[in-house]
Image (cartoon, rainbow, N blue to C red; front, top):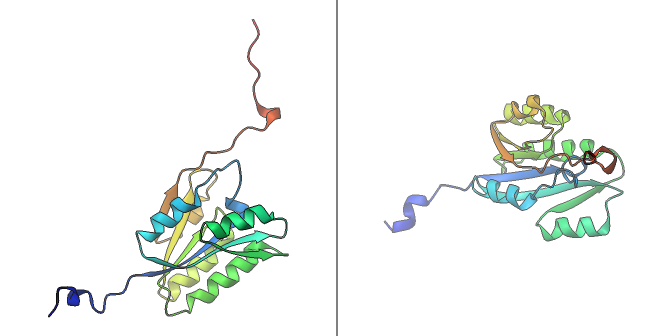
Length: 163
């Protein structure tokens, strides 16, 4: 028996990651997507990494997502619907062990519920700003990422006091 024979039969968990682009990729949140990939990589192999964007996404944003290892999916309709359908498709994929969702939106709770019914583990990648408590409570695992938070718009900035 060789040194590595003890690892035979053990498979690294396979992860399908779905990112709600319009909900996550915002300047005022300032989130590092590579940090999310790194933390997921500690759990298993990211087999699918898709980011959903609407038809208004710039070519520069799309290129940046590809450069960060994401497969962009551009939709002309509601991004949430396309993402939910594709995430649900992976629930029946026997090669996927985890369904990971990166969103702040409670619209995806039914996907998480269905994944659990089919024996999949679920991961929520949460942002510490504006995250739904119900969504956080729906995942088997939570990965918290630090966002910069909402940056005040110029009209919201306080002007210095004058004495």
